[in-house]
Length: 305
Image (cartoon, rainbow, N blue to C red; front, side):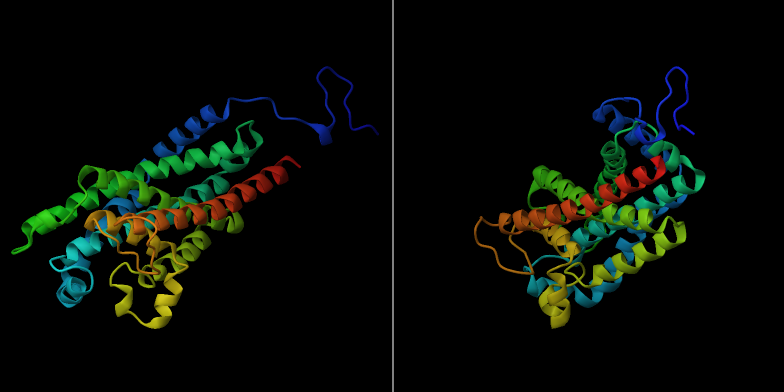
């Protein structure tokens, strides 16, 4: 029996082609708008992205600042308050929280059937992923601005603290901080979506993402200088993306070289930290992003078959 139907427009099932759709840029814009609206309507995402980092910042500044403030000032630079030292860690922590839940939206689409419908559409696969990432970038940028403002406010309200020492690189430094944060966020967005595509389960995505991401904060230079931590943590920190994200932002805030995992002298001043940190984060993005897109393509082929 033939698999070809004798009728106008009939095609063989094995050689079926999707109709041509929009261009990649248009597909990315459509995906971006959809995910931006979807996330903004989710109260859980709003809380974890905007409220939780603020609470975490205030508590960590008060609790750890009372214990580690003196050690940080001696190790990093005289006059640097713990609020200033902690701000990059909270920026990275908030980006991490936003990126870690990125895969949940993908799992929700799988459970409602929207994911399968999208895969069967003529939408460009890479554009689907790019649009989703761009929506997360908007959220991370807003978070970063809120945390920078909160850090400055904490110094204004803190007796004896000098807000003048908070951000040494001015408006260009703020732009640089946003860029580093966005690049860092891309690493864990890709990771979260990889977990979602592999598990296709909401609970598993949340558990696996948190199982890895939260401990990584403490195996880095986020809360204390690496030289104050055990040797095994210093060794693991070299392969930890959080270390490069925190060090890159901290260098832009303090206006000096603070790279903690190895020494670079090829550039000048803070660039000896920023350039290697950005290069390392881009490397993580390329590897994990390629895996995420590959899994998306594989899921697409499986749906077509």
